[in-house]
Image (cartoon, rainbow, N blue to C red; front, side, top):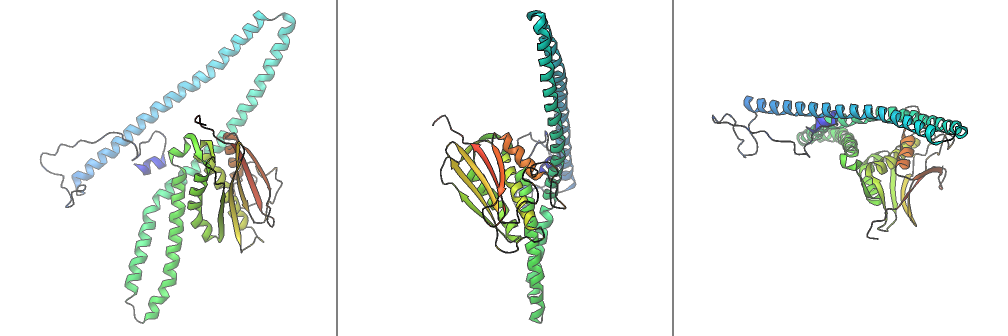
Length: 367
């Protein structure tokens, strides 16, 4: 169920949602329970029931998707019809209520307003295309992450068996020679496991819900996810969090994660540039409560910016040969979606880069 949902998340049930049940009448006892009474032996009959359940879920998902598409189409038609009717009504009101000498000026003002809205809509369409392409990449990454979970576990289990059997090898040096390559296998498998877990964690639905978000909690969770990956790249990730309980904003956790993750990715890429430092690499994430606002800062001691600070936020602008140039654009848009501000400056310590995002603190009704 979860794999099907990762491949096509819209309107799909998951193991976290109750969608129904399968009732089986088995008077002949064709389904045989396992000895531990947990589940059934995977016989032909059991496989047929499972296939039926999967087909039922597919049918249910298709129906829900068709209903959703019908609702969207109705909404699109209404969206096209309502503005035209409202415009015609406004023009009629102007014609009836205004003197002839003021009517022309009002019509010109209306046309100017329409042109402004048209430009805004075109810009929104371009953003929509960008984020649809990125959503495709994200969904693909989630499917990949889900698919490689079992092979990674199998690799880790296999190396344990190899270690156990190699202990009996003679002479002892043969077993010692295997230790290094097996350690590499474990290290790389763990890296893949951490990466795949990160992709799935980012796409959890509850992170897209709006509400009161504890910024420090989000940063701490990202620290846990990123720590193994940055450690492998020999980058130290340090937190400097404001200890006040008021580090809360109103928004979606996914947007905060998006901002910080893209800045961390930018830092990792910067350390890969020719001439970048190879020792004492460090990234610091700060949360700073400043009156009615809270600031999030991500600072590294890498080589700094390779282009104008005004250009780094533009889509497609990158100095990395394999970069997309969308990371900081997404971070900027996410900050604006949260009603915040964004800025970038050179770091305070030996070059480097420093990103700063400021948001209004959330004040509950109780206060």
